Amino acid sequence: MSTTLLSGRNLAKLIQQKVRDQARDLEADGLRPTLAVVVATNDGSTQWYVRSIERAAEGAGVHCRIVDLGSDATEQALASVLKDLSAEPSVNGIILQTPLPPGVDADALVGHIAPEKDIDGANPLSLGRLAVGQPAFAPATARAVTEILDHFDIPVAGRNVVVIGRSAVVGKPLSLLLLERDAAVTVCHSRSGPLEEYTRKAAVVVVAAGRTGLLNGSHISSGTVVIDVGTNVLADGSLVGDVDEASVRGIAGALTPVPGGVGSVTTSLILLHTTRAARQQSCAQVRETVPI
View 1 (cartoon, helix red, strand yellow):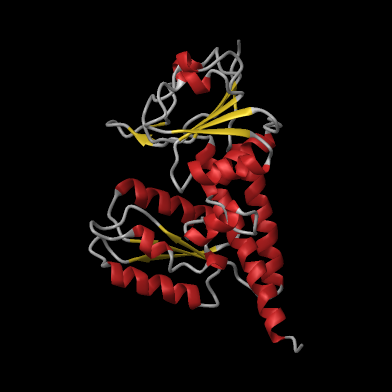
View 2 (cartoon, helix red, strand yellow; view 1 turned 90 degrees about the vertical axis):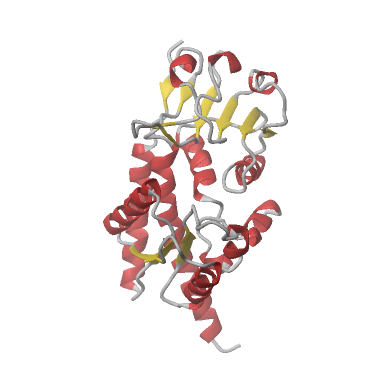
């Protein structure tokens, strides 16, 4: 069997064009969509990722403001910055980039991001709204998976979909997004037992555990669609996913590559969420100024 590679690059370009169109419309109304990225680390891969967001934003017409507090930033300093950005009218989207300094409670900090500016779904309020079907921005990585499935016309309604990983960043919100599409979702984790007991019955398997080579060809059946969300940096600096790509080729019906798959779409969605947040905030301000 030939395995189709589900590249995210063309989809990312389509999303970026949508961002440019929305940014142009906003600027015509006197608004400049602005994304603030709060950083408190010297981690090389994180710095690279932040620069990639900055470059993509510049090309799409979104202003990207990097707030670098340094690797010795305190939790109080980070909380203060997030509160200030949440209250600043010119800022439309906020990301708190990880990792954070030792001892800093990320779960407590994301609660300071205003839900309407929480364009990467970090605030627990966003996940709660997502769970009950209320408007909210899902984490961009989770949304990237469903965007890829839609783009390549891969149906999930009524089909078995296995999500490996239960993080609040990918696994949990992705399971909610898939349930919205009427998938029969199973979430696997470190206590689930042998993966193959679940994955061999799945039409679609999404791997988001952060473990190199976690899924291999013995875990899947012929024709399974495999979405690899993993981003693991090897000693030589190369990037690989959670899937042993060589062993699943020829068995999987389709596979997202790493790099060039989910990650390509994620950055574009962060910018799209920013322009959508800017429009929503603009409309809310108009409603507040109109007498009742």
